[in-house]
Length: 301
Image (cartoon, rainbow, N blue to C red):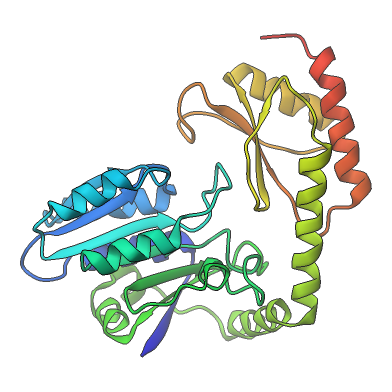
């Protein structure tokens, strides 16, 4: 009963799904969005609210008790829980099983944007659902192809009734030119690599690199957020410190972008490092050595 639709980008896919679901029925739909969700999900909700049919509730994905309370007391006929599979600025994972339990308990749909999970999580790289062994007709799964797959585009997988609704109501899907046959061929080839032996080898190498980074990054001046994914943030606090540290690392040949408000909350500027299977042991250890050196030599803000 599962079908899929292909979109030009993950941003467009998220926008399309949320605005289309905001048109379900004549009564309101309640959307429950994780506070740290990606901008594309936030923008989709903003557009859906403009249609006058959406009530929005934000929740902290680290503390689902409050979400449970809101769902329990919500009498809306339609409910949609929206969350990142891997949070793009923190690197932590969505509590999929707990959210699916709430979706089942309160008759809600669960939309997961797995941009940073597809290709790198799960035995075959199928993403956070494979990694968490989660399967349900309530799940709307969005995977993007601009990260691990090395291409562009995105897809939405869901129950055939939801896909049928999107085909009729998702305006960016209806009124956009279809992607090229060449891209379709590249997508099939990329997926075959990801789910085969080569993909398994690359995912194993990535996990080795993540483990090495966590072991060797012993600096104490800045905080390394706990993450088991490729996204490894270094929290520095102020915008000025983030920029200075990024520039200093650039002088040593390490490009790690400084992320500042409004992308992240005020006072939580960071360097957002993304590890890959292509990084070498020497590069990672070299970065750790440079950070240890800068920890003592970089003047305070």
